[in-house]
Image: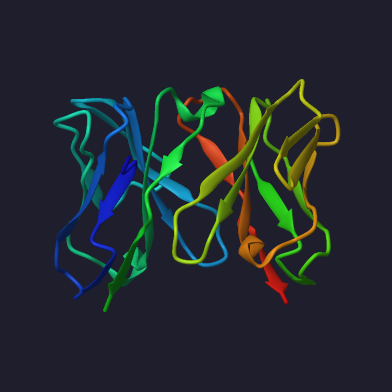
Length: 115
Length: 113
């Protein structure tokens, strides 16, 4: 059972470049999330989705875009990469909304450096 | 503003010893509190989830406590093992927004032989 799979694991981008972080889950979860984790800080929600075709902004959405064409996939796109987007990105999914008390499953993370 | 503060920031313990991590929160109203374990270079993995009515919850050698009145939680690790070396993250939900969780910065635990 793969769970939540993210790619790539590591990536170095130049300022102004664009890229997409891929995320897929095989648990048939409706709810999916993208977080970023900066050193010494708690995870921050970037975007979330409650089902295919439905996405919404989280706490720190600026500079990012998402799409949800299928239940399984929730890619995160960085447009015009900036040094402030250097971070570790985590995709996550859950069967019900994250505040309902059900387990949230996280991917292994994607380390992104913008230089 | 909802906040989750964890202490200590880091600690080192000898294998076989116990330790306790603290989590204080200002999140209100309160819905549930979770503890996650995050190994270096990996994603967080859920240890426990506690709601308002639960005071204690155990998962193998991990025991979490919750005092909703004082807005404090603790995670106790018993008979630590080298594999317990990780960051432990406290996460609190206010229940008012289904998609808003407040994450602590984590406590880094290093277990030495």
